[in-house]
Image (cartoon, rainbow, N blue to C red; front, side, top):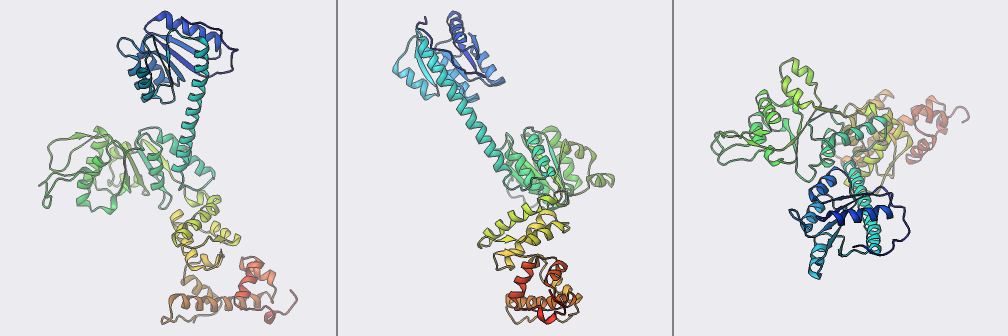
Length: 485
C-alpha cells in the first residue's frame, strides 16, 4: 500500500481534494493519510465518479486523485469531463498497470500527474503541494482575466460619480442573469453602450449581439427583418430571408427605440418573449430560438400605454429588469472626465497632436445645460478640437460657430460684422473672430477703465488667458486706462 514517512505539515488551506477509486479501502486509506498530513484541507473519498463531477459543479475543487480503471466512467473519461467543467482542477491519475503510453495519454488529456500503485507517501505529499499551488495560480489567473474583461466591457464608460458607479453595479448584476432588460434614459445617455456591456459581461458573450434601430426600418419591412420570411410570402420575396432573431440565436438582440414599433409587430414580439419561438412570414410552422432580449427607449412608455400605442402585456414582458442611464445633470462632477476623454478621442479622429482644455473651459462645460447629454458634449468637444489650432483650448472655442459670436457682437453694439463668402472658410472665420475679439476687449476695458484684473473677472476667464488673447491680437489696455491697474 503506502509507505514512507511524511515531511513536516505545511500551511495549505481552503482547498478540497477528492479521491475516487473503486477499491474503497485504497481511497479511504489515502484520505486518512492525507488528512493527517494536511489537517487544514478538506479531503473526501468516494467510489462513485459521478459524485466527483457533481461536487465540482457545485463548488471549487482543487485536486482529484482518480483510478484509471473503474466500472462505468473510467479515469480517462472522468479526466476529460473534469477538465470541461473546471480546467483549474489538478487531476492525478493512479493505476496499478502503468505504462509510458498510458502516462503520455493521460497528460495529453490534461492530467497534472500520473502515478503507479503501490503509492509512495512522500511522492504523494509533494504532488499535493505542487498541484494545489498550480490550481491556485490558475484560479488567480482566471479571476484576473475576468477583471480585465470587466474593465474592457466598461472601456467606453467614463465617470466615477455615485450614479455612474451604481450603473456599473446594476450592469454587472443584470449581466449575470438571462432576464429581459429594458434600458431607459434620455437621448445621448449611453443606452447602446449599456446594452453592449450587458452582453459582453454575460454568459452569451461568445455569441452574436444584434443591434436593431427600430425606427430606421420601414414599418412594412420590420416584421420581415425581425422574424424572416419564406420565398413567395409577399410581392418581391424572391427568396427566403433569415430574420435578425435567428441571427441572434444563442446570443443577444437589442431593440433600440422599442417605443416606435407598430402594434402589429408588438403582438409578434410578445409571442417571442412568451414562447421563445418565431414564425417567419409565409411559414406555417414555428421554431424555437434561444435569444436574450434587451430593449431600449427614451420615450415615456407609460404615456404610450395610456394612449393605446404600446401594449400593456408587452410592456410587462419587457420590463422584467429596468436599467436607467443617468443624464449629464445627474453626473455634473463627471463632465471634466468626459470632456478630457472626448478631447483625446477627437484628436485621434482628426489625426492631431494632443490638446487639453483650460480650467475656464472645463468650468464652462460643467455649468452648461446639456439637453443632448453625453452625445451633445462629445459633438461640442469635436468642434472645439477642429477649430482650435493651439495646444490648449479656451472657453471661446466652446461657443457654437457663427451665431453666438454675432449675438455677442450685437450685445456690444456691433451689428455689421463682415462675412466675406469669397474667402476660404477658415480665413473668413479668423477675420470675424479677430474683429469680434478686438471690439469685445475694447468695450471690456472701457467698462473696467483698463483694469486687467477686473476685466478678467468680468469676462469669466483667467488673467493669464486674457493677456494671451491680448497678445494674440496686439491689443493694449493703456488706451482705455483712466486709472491705475
